[in-house]
Length: 45
Image 1 (cartoon, one colour):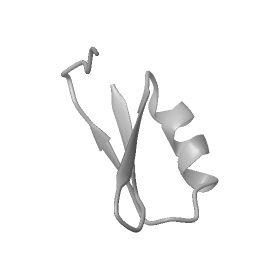
Image 2 (cartoon, helix red, strand yellow):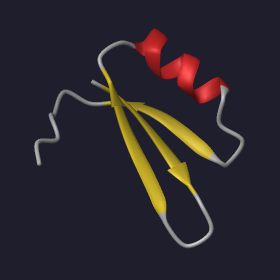
Image 3 (cartoon, helix red, strand yellow):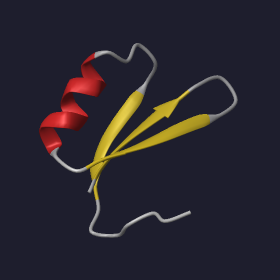
């Protein structure tokens, strides 16, 4: 699972993607500071 973490003023948002390509496409549209990471864990709410 690929994870994009977006850092905003006093908070952050996390988005999960199945493929790196999907995550990279979304990352290109973000203007706030952000990171792309990979994990084998799944986040289930």
